[in-house]
Image (cartoon, rainbow, N blue to C red; front, side, top):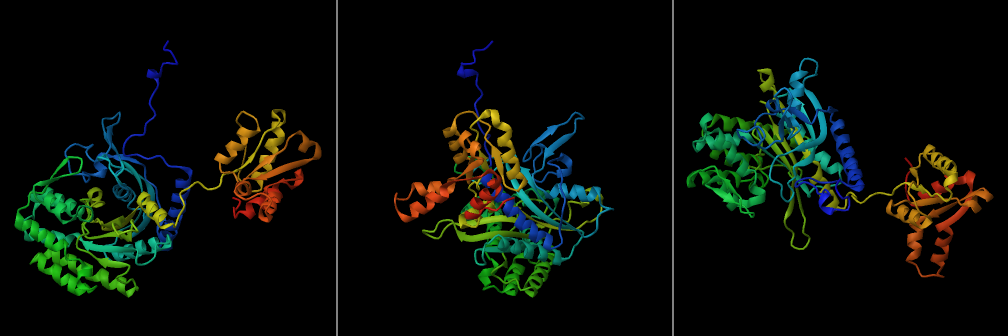
Length: 504
């Protein structure tokens, strides 16, 4: 038998790279944020649906990234039937499978929202995780640009519902068909160039992060990152690179907010491409719809650099960009993207064998939570914990449990101290639990039919005050008092009300 004292036999507690643990405060803040977004989605008529985290790999498709091995980009494994299964890498592909499988029973257009974790088998880095949460809304069964316009408006409303003011965000819109037209003009049309087009899309999608030089490298031979890893580029020549950069560097706002001027500029980049012209016509319709609904350029604008990195987008694409600075000293850099989406008319069709138009939007929950914390719009510190009933006499555990039950029956979070030790460790435990108060009943209090309520919040404030002062004396009377046992619930409620803590 191995020696238990031998440290070499111990497992090392370590979190895998690219994953996160979440504290009670972060979980509560995430829940509050999701509830606000959910209220906006439901206001627009969307309803919830939930799909599993595991799907057949072929149902997810080879979209992230386009590699031969099924576990490239996604986490995959073989089941007992020798079938490849994968952890979902987004919430859109599973929705397409769900809609296709239940097509005849669902109303069309079908509006739904989902929230859950997704998984990416990619190299982790700053802000890049292997597991993260998304919150999606999708409309399946409508080919109208009005559905895309609605997604943009709903995204803007959701951001504002979280307390992010106008001027601190913008929903940026583009259309994949316009970029397809640009690529046709430089000789990248047809199935033979599908892989190269996807590499170009992913390069453009990194423009905000890598800038002109970095994207130019990825459009050309490739780029070596800070760690020394090399990413192979699209292999375009100098003229082709200049054409692509010329298009993505002519954003809507460069034309003074004039959508007609911007689209005229993009029209020159697509030449005679019918696909590109179709994309520009769709953007004009979206612009007319959002403006008619009074969503101005401070909320929804049009930007040629927005392409989205996933292969399955077929039309309009959009992205929510937070424009405020993360560094108050020099005004840079901007916080960046916290969500996006677009039209994907081919995903459901993979299962149905017939066209099924769809459009959707996804919020990056963790990144948006970080933005809200930066703005002071949400707290990720742990909220106040439960009231703690201390134990002085272990032979009277039933009495103490009755006190806890009385508090819980009144809707007050409460727990009985179940550890070992005397009074001091119990108070230390209550402090760590951020309890607003503790309930104390020793033999003296029991003989008098009383309980003592100790207000830990006032006690902490009292410790900072100079003794003898009027404020100190006033808080002393609040910090601890004995009340009849029958008034336990009432006395605890008074403490909670004093500190603005609402019972459950």
